Every structure is written in structure tokens, then in C-alpha cells.
Image (cartoon, rainbow, N blue to C red; front, side, top):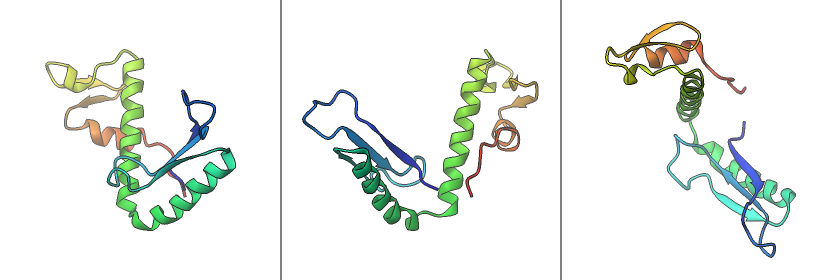
Amino acid sequence: VCVGTIARRSGVPNGVDQWGWSCGFYPGPDPGEGGSGSDATFEAARAGFEAAWRTFLPTRTEADFQTWRDRRDWTAWKYAMWDAGMKMPTQRPDARSRCFYGAEIDIRSTEQHVRDAHRGPVAA
């Protein structure tokens, strides 16, 4: 499992490294713990990323990854609600709403609902 990005850098001059990488995730580690860098080629950026990941991974706990998964799932659910034109319980006077597929939710049950019904993929 690796969490981060390797991508072409946008808006940089031709004479500088065109590939950027960042290793790590939020929430979880403190900012800057994972590392980031830039390189001239994709292959060099990947090597930099992989070296940083080998250093970063042993410092993470399962709780760090679970916190990240919970945030990922919450964010995906929130945007699906907005895309469906549904209001969050916090946006309604009675603090109740319906999930985009019909389940009744309220402020207290929303977090558990997202965990139970909208869990994203869990990497092995």
C-alpha cells in the first residue's frame, strides 16, 4: 500500500524538474513527515517516492491508516450527497436527513452510517 502522488508539475518552466511527488497522507502524520520532491523523469520521481515510502511506512500505525480511510470515505459520501442534491443533517433545522440512497440519518448517526454503508476499498 502506498499513499501519495507522482504527477507532472503544472506551470513550471521547461528548464526545471517536470515531475513532482509527495508521500504520505492526511489526516494521520504531521505535515511534512512523508516527504516530497521533484525530478526530471517519471522514473526518477518514482524512485524518490519509493525511497521516501520505505522510510515513512514503518512510522505509521494501523490507526493512522484507519483515520485516513475514514476521512476518505466521509469525503466521498459528502460529495455524493451534494451531487444528489441532498442536505446534510447539519444543514437542516431538525438535524435529520436522508442518505442519497434513502436511509434516514441524523447528526448522531451519520458518522456510523458512513462507516457501515459507504466504506471504500480497504487495501490488503
